[in-house]
Image 1: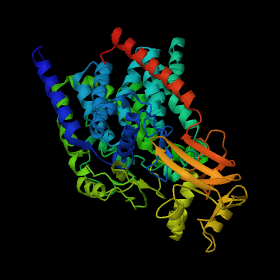
Image 2: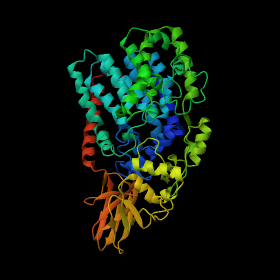
Image 3: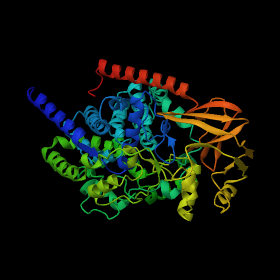
Image 4: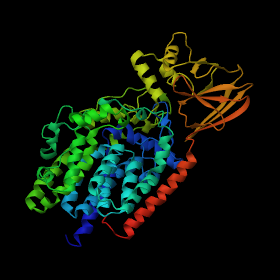
Length: 583
């Protein structure tokens, strides 16, 4: 490639990226149901000068900052400050695919290997997951850092993976790095651990505030953890591609649309190399429920059931196989036999659509109940377009709708909210909807009386009793009676706070229709759960101005984020200034 050709190719790639990010949309799966609406909500908050801590739009209210699916502290959030949400969203995928190409180019010194990686089934499939696509760039970068014994680069890679919030990819990358280094780990390389911790610290602090109360932290069942395991039959897809689309390939039994690497993966796997050990280890773990050892470990150790989907181990496995295949790609026949099928498969599997069908008009900010589709649709684009127009949870949040009594797909809502959701689905008792504010209770009001309950079961039985009136009574940890003259005098919702005025002759109990978490900060006022998962505040006598903000460790998060940003900037400066790599 001569010097005149490179600028022309770069310009063409840039134009394609601009066109895709402006007119396209990575719509599929988690992007639709979780990531895109969250990033639209977060953009509004960033532009209002707020750190996105609380999501008023989903699940009757749920956390943002501590949610590992929101990437609240990831560096490319800066794109949302000056670009339309869908453009910044699309660029996140394109940037990480490009960085993945560059990282693999630096790791293998091969353009062909870089293209093989960027076109692989796993890389293309990762564009359905806003958080997981980061691993496409960061896992090869971590292995490059391990090869070069660079603690700064290794800490940067692992820290950014942790900021992206996908624990299986962090675990997989750590195992891969360990295989490369053990037993000769240079002591200086251990500096990567504190570097990674400092980079990830804002996310870790924010998550620690909610970890004891969200569904995910209480663990999944063994069956849920082992969902999306790679079956022995599907292993053949590595070599021959998805020649026969499985009927369940779009269900949760399959995480990635494709695992295709090419026939070259077969001889590559049998090379003598530490990368072969990485590839086989990751395949061993990816088998999940089809591997009796992995299945036994998951069933025997409930403590590890906070992660799920063994198929994610295909990410580091693919990196290792591409490295192993690099020498074979010097042969022209192998090169074309590998790259041409990958190009064709990528064109058919990339989950990209026009953005126009997903552009929805603004809606009034009312709390609603909507039924979403539990099963991933099989007619990719048409059905997703219909779902967008129906404003299904949580996509409709992009239009301003607010949902309640809907199960969060990322497991990051209150465990008590899950109980309310399950009770509604099992009984169809609309009282659960009314309590959550769907054509029922207002955003804030004084509860005339609260009755103490000794258990969740007793609380549920009381709420579902025909004699229970949610307008006059609330279930609470304590008995309490508010004076008859107590009233809410004002209610103002700001981007990340609630301002509520209360007037009362005696102490009163304020009901705020947001999900209860202990992380709510009402100044010196005590908070407590009402009706299982709603927020209550004990206000004193007289005129009280209540300011509610989510997050009791905001100062610690802000300081941690400052140090994280400075360390990321310093690491990138070191990376570019010393030109230790080509990425």
